[in-house]
Length: 351
Image 1 (cartoon, rainbow, N blue to C red):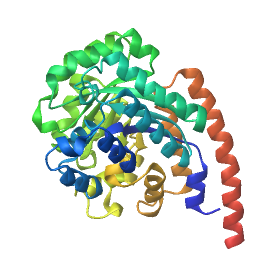
Image 2: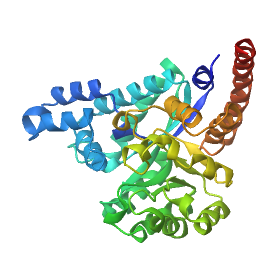
Image 3: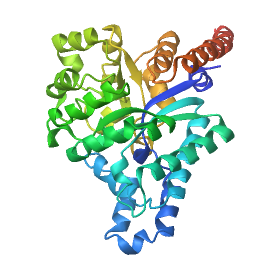
């Protein structure tokens, strides 16, 4: 068993996958045609081209526009089920999926309860057919701060709690609104004992990281590019004990690094930062979680033990219930040992 095969064999968890950036393109186009989108949307073919060859400076716009091609509960159930199939093929056992309700609630007749039911219809089908668990992170887009209180109320309501919503999130370009605009929504989430996640550092770098940590007090950060450039801020984030979910491919696609080997993953890992790997928007970044781990090995020099540690962290820092987390950690350790034995046999035979 090679390292690539080892990575594919071990169980994994995905903690930062965005639904509108993870939709199967063929399914999305089928839904668009069923819903008469090509005849209603100007430049439809141009948007299809952007799905195939994304302009990475317009990712949020692409995700929002194409997300609105979905108009019915059965459409949502379909894309969620497809996501479950895709996760299963990577041996991903659990995923926390970021959903921006505002992308879907503009559709006539689509209320929050209908949306939650549709998400869980697809989730339950994927669980029964492919043994993949999914939970939801309800997100506020930064360019829509007025929705913050509404999303916080939806995420903390009884329907959401019963409907597998585990966190409130903040997504989008940081330069459109100051982080303080969302403080009340995050405070509401904390008071009602729901987890929080904030995207920081992607568009304004270091300037966006500490304000997000201090003002929002999130349980998890995503991206946080630039930490490797400032030891003082890096230490503050380490001391705050906040896990950071990153995507190597995202940094490459956005031009933050010229080559994946330039990504400071080893530096961040060695600093005691709680780094976790994610694919983020796999359809738009054209990468999956297995490939992110493979790149960590082949481009960033991570050995098998470090890969295992990264994968184990994704379970430890998930928002699963304690019993479910303990059960998955036990299964993870058991399956990793089996895969490790096969890998060592392969390594000995190769030498």
